Amino acid sequence: MCLTTNCVMTTPNLGTPSAINLTNATNPPIWNQNTTGTAVGISGAIFLSNTNLSILGDMMYVNAAPALARLAGNATSTKEFLTQTGTGTASAAPVWGALASGDIPNNAANTTGTAANLSGTPALPNGTTATTQTAASNDTKLATDAYVDGHFIANGTAVLGTAAIASGACATVVTVTASGVATTDVVKVGFNGDPTAVTGYGASATGAVLSIYAYPTAGNVNVKVCNSTSASITPSAMTLNWKVTR
Image (cartoon, rainbow, N blue to C red; front, side, top):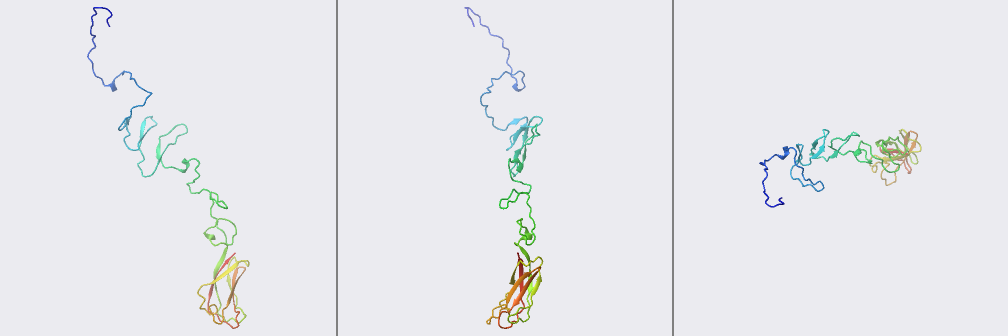
């Protein structure tokens, strides 16, 4: 700047300019950096500390060094979740893992083999196991395959006699041992074959059909065959199936 007349202007010696590699330079200039705005997006693969994040699903985390490290994505066909378990005072590296029941707060499911309580009357609490009921038991325990027929006591067969039965008389009683049978039990009987063509038990034009009476005594099942007709009847062979319930 010249504030008087007759000024002499001279050119300063600026020297010869030269180029430098800014990444290796010392004392680089201060950048007019804007830390309050939004950084420009970077496209393409990102390289941080020689860690390549160009693979689908990869993530970065800080390891114990500490240094940036790469966690590869889950490439299996099984769904996995990102998990991390610290020590109580320090964190740990993240890993992929399956979701466990205990990972979900207030999860009532038990995956170790015991189901949650079953509803109903009476309710069945956790840990309930099947109890074998004895024959004729009247309790309310959980039934098993050893107690599949309610109040079942015993069953078997009885072979009926073939001797003549006089009018108004009964054949000799047929007695079969049946353990556990009491006089208060119920005996049910049925033919173990088609009786309709068997003499004494099947159809008859003259009404020559015998009557069968089954009843219990202590430890036994008894069957009597009686003739209520006006003539003697000689029955053919017949076998009965019987069952005792309580």
